[in-house]
Amino acid sequence: MSGLRIDPDQFSKAVIGVLDDYGEDVAKEVRKAVDVTTRELVKETRKTAPRKAIGGRPAGTYASHISSKVSRDTPYAYSKLWYVRAPEYRLTHLLNNGHALRQGGRWEGTGFLTEASKTHSAAFEKRVKGAIRDVSRR
Image 1 (tube, rainbow, N blue to C red):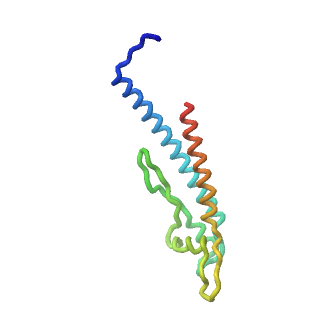
Image 2: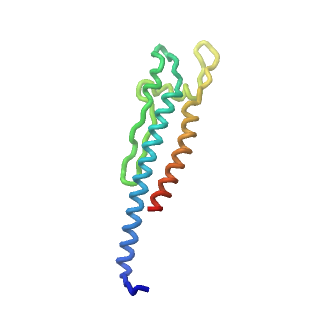
Image 3: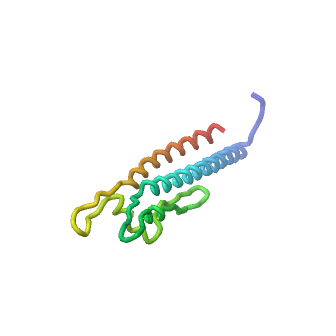
């Protein structure tokens, strides 16, 4: 032993300081993972969304309205929301899940949002685990 003595109060303060730094570093990395994943989700759903003319609107109008925004931003909570800007937001569940047609019959949904959500949820989970692993190794 080196003979180093430390007061228990100082030790607890030092441990709390290290854990606070670790939490801040993890939060920064998770924030980056949220940004990257949301950007990729928006890009993929714009690419895979139905492109035909809908209700008299030009082809591609719906896809061009897909976007994201920050819904929560605090030091330890950060989230983004995928959404479709007005007035096209009303079509999302119809295009994804399908709907009945006015003349009879049914239009089967494409599932573009469901598939993209599954893919990017898994990717987000991997990014967060990697971020925690990387911060732990520092």
